Image (tube, rainbow, N blue to C red; front, top):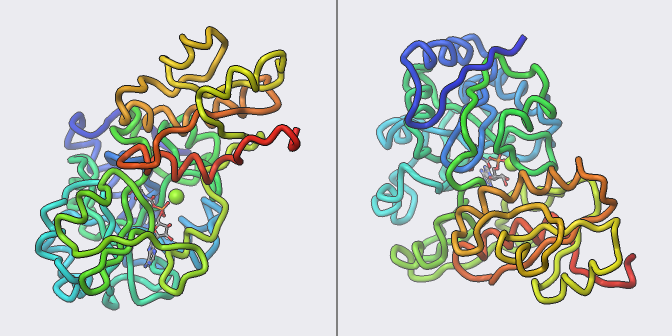
Length: 332
Ligand code: TXA
Ligand code: MG
């Protein structure tokens, strides 16, 4: 049986952490909040614990996990952190929604890195998560707490439906601040390769690196995760420019639009909310829940509004592109 504990970033009790740390020490799994999305965590030094994570998610075994640390000192104990270009400046972006690929040492088990000699390293901006790591005494490997291929989980209700009782403890709180996953980068000399865009954008990274490039599928240095289907609802989802959607849905009762509240008010129709268009963080917090609402709605199709492909909205569009196909009337 899974134990649900009401606690979140900024609001937890000492004994809440003890329960989670005990589960990690036993080699069991814990669902915990971060500032991005919920993680499904296990001891990053234990092959057995990490294999439980792959099994619970149905995750392909060649897709490595992100390892969460409590401090820079701890990162140095488990990785060749000082070899990472611009590591001292990257440290200033933590705690925060950033994952950096770094060479690991033997203390991190090979299941966590999917056999690679590198891992994704991150210090989450959530005191509950960092305290859990500290009390567990080991770094915590944690992918997003969703079934493989599904949108990342931003509420415990999503997680219970998809992962059942696979974790011993689940911390239940509000939707995490960002609602989409961390920026994953691979520093290569003076170039920063973005493997997955997130809240830290090109603009932030250009303050540190000479160049920023986006990894493309098929290129040599690519994040294993990028080759798999991602963030997808079960029902077909189209994307289209806001101004096109009203015409597309007119007379089509089997298609539900996924819109910001401003667009919903303009179109005066039933819609699934993406929150406030003027606050990109509100939009990202709503995104994955909206995709799941499409699946539980009566509609056969969804159509989601598009955003500018720059800045943080660009990171949101990265997820929307992966979850949807460009609208084309011939496809209906
Ligand atoms: O915000 C987040 O990053 C969340 C929270 C829980 O921290 N975690 C998360 O983990 O999104 P996950 O496993 O769902 O995504 C990890 C991504 C995958 O695309 C994976 O391929 C990539 O990071 N990755 C992990 N280790 C890597 C490595 N050694 N080399 C290249 N890519 C790696
Ligand atoms: Mg994931």
